[in-house]
Image (cartoon, rainbow, N blue to C red; front, side, top):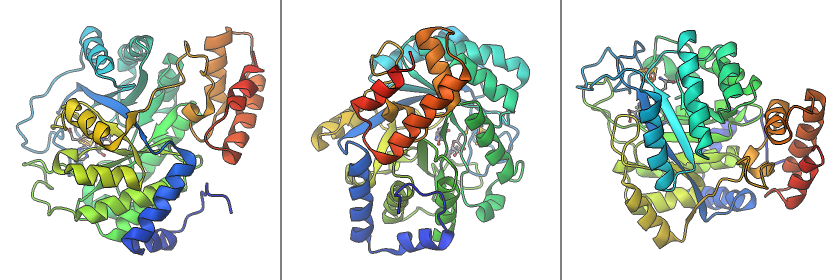
Length: 386
Ligand code: SAM
Ligand code: DTB
Ligand code: SF4
């Protein structure tokens, strides 16, 4: 049976959670080595481009207008200030810059400012990611056209536990946004939060929902709840760290070709727990001293641990300046025609139609299902298109 499955049942996922810890970690780590260099971790930096006063009621979130968290609100940042932060992130070694806004969804009139940010950050040679709330199909297309690489939108928890956490938008609204992102040809970043008082079955339900998406999200952030005073979950009991590591391992098994990101909550994790998470299959982190509004370990702390563990920060391989621009490993487990069409446009000018793109995307995706990591022939196959 293929290791890349989209038909996971909740009961099967629960069985994985119930495995003896060593068996679970062995299985996760073995798969991890088949698809990734186990000594590489991707590093992304986050910036809050619009802070606080969000109308939604997400029970975990310090940025909801409904909770007294003492947060200072800030309107949408100016382009120059965003660029200043992006340059600093690049200088400290980040390869992806993720911009987050405390919105239910962006207004159509915000799009010109947002697309200008995407273009300018891209021009610095950074991969771009945004998380702005729900998107319409048109908004997703605008962002994709500007060159946005990833869109982050989390399912957060299982469909059943969801209603205990958020009442102002539906689970289906989130799935619809992910559909628009995918249809526009962007890579999907979607994960959730653990430690919100959910049961194991909810952690299994969250991961199962992500794993039945076709293709899987290229990036899967696993956040450990940051308990912020003033939010309804401010006094939530701490999650057993072993359960957290199990969640990472199960995510790795269900989505072997995705980057699994050790996201919020790292301030609460010691170095041993970080090391265990990397062994279980985490291969991406948010890097830099702040997440959106809460603290994160300092970059030099992460680098010092990388050095002790022999881990290298992953280098990006899909820059238009890079000869490996078409490297399939960087494009994700599934290459959409829209992704290839945009790549062809940037690389070869407007000489190719969607038909060329469809053929190339198909060949590359098939090869990726068969062989990992991507080989030089992936690049060669794609280069035939030029
Ligand atoms: N407003 C947009 C949205 O909700 O889609 C984008 C920003 S929102 C802060 C992005 C994600 O951050 C949420 O979906 C949630 O998973 C995560 N998050 C927010 N507060 C958190 C907390 N206290 N602990 C862990 N994760 C959190
Ligand atoms: C994600 O999954 N985690 C990040 C990012 N996507 C946007 C956000 C974490 C936020 C933690 C709370 C805060 O700093 O406000
Ligand atoms: Fe708003 Fe996003 Fe926070 Fe929910 S998670 S309250 S949508 S900023």
